Image (cartoon, rainbow, N blue to C red; front, side, top):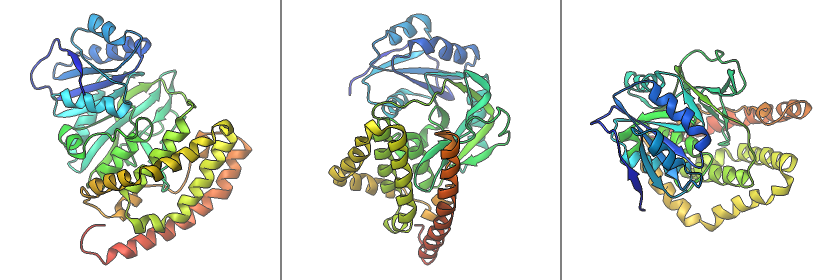
Amino acid sequence: MMTTMSDRGRHASPQISVIVVSYNGRAYLEQCLGSLLAEGVTDREVILVDSASTDGSASYVERAFSCVRVVRTTNGGYGHGCNVGARVARGAYLAFLNQDTVVRPGWAEALVAALQHDPGAGLSTPRILLLRDPDRTNACGNDVHCTGLTLCRGLGAPADALGEDAEVGAISGAAFAMPRHLFEWLGGFDEHFRMYMEDTDLSLRARLAGYRCLYVSDAVVYHDYRLRFGPLKSYYQERNRYLMLLKLLRWRTLLALLPALLLGEAVTWGYVLLREPHRVANKLRAYAWVAGHWREVVAQRRRVQGMRRVADRTLLAACTCRLAFEQAGEGSTVRAAHALFDPLFRAWWRVAQALVWRWEAGHARPG
């Protein structure tokens, strides 16, 4: 792959490389990059990866922010852009940001300090508040359900509701940091995902390798988050969820989870039928993709399993059995969903954990 790069204002060996991936983000970049550069930090480089924008974003940044490195590449999705930025980065730590974010001073240093303080931590994510409603939370890390469904931790809660640092199921791809050597060893983002779930996949691959994900409350980022329903969102979310689970978990673990996974299918089918009935084919396309690319899925699974350092019971312990249905709706439908599905997920989650623990307890090697 060929890229072109504008390279100005560089200084040697920065501690942190901040990577902002942009696609037609001209309306956001002045505020985003302005907040980064206003911090006045010298031991840092800022890299903008422009994913074939058509709104003049790259040229604008070259003119207006001469100290930002601009990398032009194809539009291969968010994970692809992050990987491109990581390949040209020189920092010992990588910090990734969405284009529609604004940072509070010290955010990146707080994320890196948490990683340095805890050698068992592989990724750190900040307190992400809503840019348009900064008294409310977007995400304090992400919660990963036992079916792989992933939701923002604390969405809509008061900004100070989650004031304690904590281990979380996964980082939010909108803003996070990790050591460059770990990012490279894991192979970066899986570019097959293109969009959605790539942050959960990266987090769980790091967990499989024995690392944890941290929420750092002192690091604050504002995100212009709005729930959007693009024409292919449900396709990519479902396809990528299946791919992630097939790569990460042992076959017998998937078997133990099968009733929960089938419940998850009932939930996602219900969501599509209620919210996007005109896009019901997206679910079928997701199934068809996995079936049609089965050899490729198995090859990816083999590579990921080669990095395994922990047992599946450790991965499952970081998951939740409760879905936050209120993040997708409100009223009687949400109450009914909780009343129906919460007890079922909770009951089978306990059974599945017991089965996996029993299967793995007799083996000396993890997993």
